[in-house]
Length: 266
Ligand code: DGL
Image (cartoon, protein in one colour):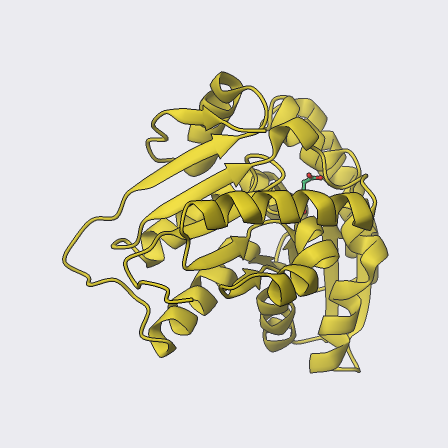
C-alpha cells in the first residue's frame, strides 16, 4: 500500500480525553492534518473488558483507515493496553500508542526510583505500565492507583468542581504515602485537572501522555520521511459516536483551540 506523506494522522480515544493528546500534536506538528474520533457512546473504557475494547479499537481504526490516514495514534491508555499489539498487526499503517513513552520518561525522571501511576481500572489491571517501567529499570519501586471515578467525573461532571477535587485528594493519598517523586498520568483525561493534581502532589513531577507521545510521533514520521512540507497550516476535524453537541461543548475546553463542527458516526 502506497501511503502519501500528505495524508492525515488519525487519533482516537474513548471520549474527549484524547484531545489533551491532539492539542500537543497540533502544536508539535502544525503543518499536519488530523482526524480525531471520540468513542463517547461507549465511554468509559475503564470498566470494559479487553475483548470489548479490542472490538471498539478495530471498528474505529477501520473508520480512520477509510479516511486515508498515514498513522494511527491511540490517544487512550486503556485502549493502548488492550489493543495496541492487535492493531499494529492488523493495520497497513503504523500504529502508535501512549504508555511506552511515559514509562520511559518516568524512569528517566525519577531521582528516588519511586514512581507512581494514576489510571483506569482496566489499565492498572493490564499490568502494562508496571512491565514497561520494570523493563527500563527493574529496581524502581512502582505504586499504581486505579481511579474508577475520575475520568467519568471529568468528562460527565464539572472538571473543576469540588467532586473532582475530593476524588483527586483521595486517589493521590497512597502515592504520597509511598513517597514517589514522579507520577505517570496514565489516562488522557487527567491532564485537564493538572492544577488540582499538582496541588495535591507538591514537588512531584507529572508525566503526561500528550507531551511524551507528540515527541515520538515527530521523530517517527521524520525518520520515515513522512512529514508534510512545513509551509502550511494543517486542518483538523472531530467525530464522535455519541452526542456531537455535547462533545463540541466539552471538547473545546479540553482542546483549548477552536473545535469546528463535530460529525456523528457509530
Ligand atoms: N482516556 C482514557 C485513557 O486514557 C480513559 C477514560 C475511560 O475510562 O474511558 O485511559
